[in-house]
Amino acid sequence: LTREAGTVVSAVMLGAIAASGLLPFTRADYEAVVGGAGGHAKASLRGFALAFDAVSAQREQARWVEQVMNDDAEAPVPTTTPTALLAPFPTALHDILALGHARAVEYQNAAYGQRYLERLQRVLAAERAGDPAGAQGFAATREAARWLALWMAFDDIVRVAELKARASRAERVRREVKAGSGDLLRVYDHFKPGAPEFAAMLPESLARRVLAWDQRRVQRGQAPWALPLKVSSHGVLGLLALRALAATKRLRPLGSRFATEQALMDRWLAAVEAGARADARLGLELAKCGRLIKGYGSTNERGKDNLLHIVDHLSDATRAGAAEAVAQAREAALADEAGTALDRTLVQHGAPARPLKAQPIRWHHNPRLKKQAH
Image (tube, rainbow, N blue to C red; front, side, top):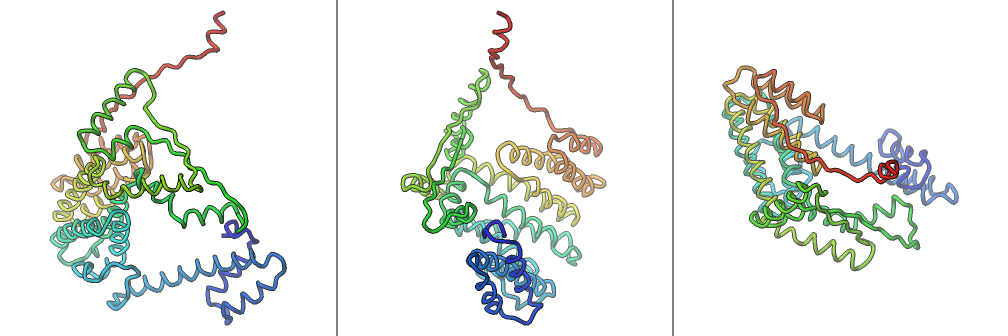
């Protein structure tokens, strides 16, 4: 916060102390003192305000969470999600469901938010069947709600354009570079979308053709195709390009990646439902596997491959120690990006290691070797 405000740390610390409520002074009392501190008063007030607002927000959130933990049915949900949509769920889940629903609606539309809740209703029904007494406190549904919300709002070029075109992003950049009100600021965004990013926006039949063309390039020893772009997001044309791309989110459900991601989510949730219905702890451990879906590009693909391999080979409730096996495999996958620990854990529990993936070998000309030969 100090760097963001361009001030000294004492102003920020004073704002945090003021918001803590430990001393009998109002915010106006503090600001009157800080505002008279000399030529750097404006920066000091900015730092004071940032810290005051941050601590105040944390205190308000802590009070609300405490109300929920105490089963206060009257605790208001800090979101615009209609209460009627949350009615089918226990009050203890309303906080996470409201946040997840709001994220899905903001990412796509109201129908997408409804799809999020419907998926979790099935998980909840399965968990109630496997844990009628609620001894686990609906933990599997809570974990599924957390990771499903993040997965449903997966990053694509439309999402990236939408985030970069927001006014709040421009304001944040100005604060970070400490640009004054009279300063001119130029911002250039660099993109390098490849064939997979373009194919993701196309229907399945066209997407397969684009990916097959790129694969043939790679097999010939060429680098995967990509289109380097430099967009001046501070200018009219650059901003219009970002806004136009962001507006295509209405077409996102027609794209091949959207369909693929939804199918993978449903496979994971089906395993969570089956696991929760048979064994409450197995359902919880499978729900926690949603943590494996993170990042973008190869990291994201590797996470999905690991998740599906665990689901396909370790989620059978008839296996002895299935819940423990899933938990150990998940932690191994998170601890080692190379996957060596995961493969070892899979084999220990009687499951096959992940299949090897073919990687192309590309040869590059080294001009120094030619000179040495002469």
